Length: 289
Length: 261
Image (tube, rainbow over all chains, first blue to last red; front, side):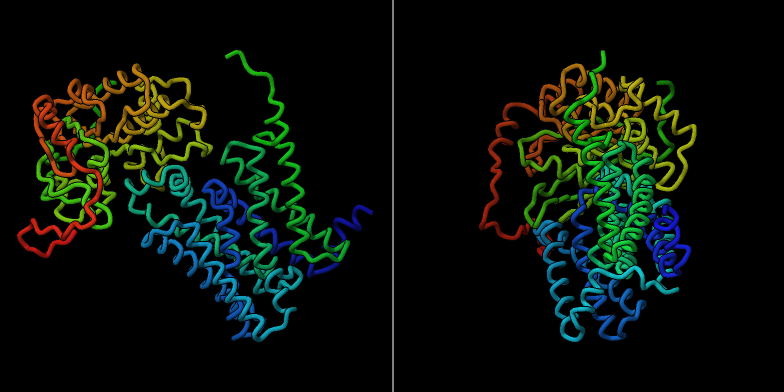
């Protein structure tokens, strides 16, 4: 019974193994990015950028059909454009960054939906928005693994810079020539992971795998060095649980994975040792001094 | 704390050459001219909106002048230690006091270098100097305002730069902390460092800083502290209007006549 539910699907079917490997790659790199998004108070920026990717992917789809490289490239260009335009607009105009981002991503989303519905059917649109993790071919797997590797390497190399840019951006800008460049590097990594996730989970669901495990991890620890691997571990478990659930019930994989992450998040919200509701409501006895 | 740790560098004076600073063409500091010699302890005073913080930002290289220039005597803006006013530190970030202060090592180890035993010793020494020994592992969001200001001063100690800029370092902190930090500034002076501090309390300026600049967009006076902060000068500074003149025309004070700000 246990084997049948939890191991057999992956042993028996190649597409399940591919789905598992691809989603785990995304979980490992996306969740630590999510931790930084939360610390930078940019939780919703990830969501906005995930919408911004759409028109690029749609153009790729219109030009080359359901071709992964074309849609990925298009999505990457669109996401980076919106990120850059937002940064530029908040610098050059009086509008704050959140307002600029909202404006750019909404226009981007409307453009994407228009493009998809002009030529494709609503089935295609659903596919782009919600992905299908069971459709991962070799190219998709290599891309997911590549993005994951690049992201983790960049996080390791620029770790100190990212921490300083989040903690005290003025100090970093005053003491380092790299200071101006770090926010763009970070947004670039987020877009990269959203685009990679869009084939596997869909544009709208990819951001869930980035944010939910990160939010859950933050509720269990105050230490950044623990929160980063913890978030990645939670994300991997959610991927596995979501795939099993999807296989058992026939639910679409993207939403199934995110629902699993949501479950972990709600449990953390109540029981989390570092800021969960129960701990805050009923603190342990105070110390002597 | 033993021998001064100052890095070897040839200190030249910081020269302000016809310096005009501001935002959106409106000058906050207008045609400032003068020299901050190495080892000076200069208090920058003036009413709100006088351009004091703007001047410090420009000295730190964070603001490009609208006109004129800042000549840092051959050293880079990056080699100046700067403590901003409303520190942009995100206090909720999960980091302990020791790691936070170690940021000061960055000018030597860079963003990618290892923080070795020598740097860790510097950090420990700085923590002891500001009286926070034993609190190394406390997260910064548990510190009081005065303790946080001590932490920021410890980071300045670790930065170990020849020029130190302080923007209202004693705002909203208690007397004993102020005294401790003043003693630290005095120590920096005996080590030959240049200290420029924006100060609101004129008594503090008179007591601890031999030189003062009275700023009210224009430089009202600059020299020996007591003479600079005399009643007549202060009255002139107060008379300066904070409001912008909506009809303000382009400033043609420079000979070129081109210069627009």
